[in-house]
Image (cartoon, rainbow, N blue to C red; front, top):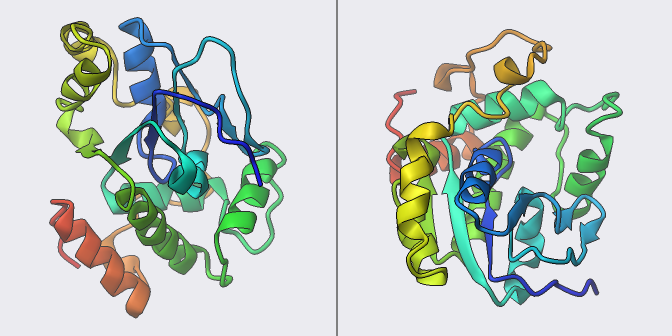
Length: 216
């Protein structure tokens, strides 16, 4: 069993939900956090001087994590579109850069073989696992206005500094466009493109619960 490093907090989500943005925002405000530095594809590891980590790979360890947990979500179709585009759910996974993340995914999530169905299932299951332990949930589209409040409870007086940096950090940080990474498929997945069935129904129900009201 992996030893869980002692941190004051983690920021968790599905991946492709803006955790890079949140880590950058908090770093600018002087909060000792990094992105996927503690909870990695090889498992958790201690990193000296860090008190927080923003990582989707922290989720399997949340039941043994003793710090505060910030759950971050993003509009589901955008997340699924991005995850499928990365190839994380492809039956033949050839991207060497992301292969370690695929191995982590296989170790902690059951893949059924259909990339879009698996991405839908992952969005729902991973967020449900976050919900079970989170102290607060935020939406990246809301410009993370609740982050300063969350941080102020951990670092009194630091919330105002985080607030001052909100307009200065783009929520497009780490987007494929900003990184100039070419897409492998046509962009713009729509609800009507999702295969019908239990996975789609669960996804749309979660989308509505999170305040995302795109119609099928």
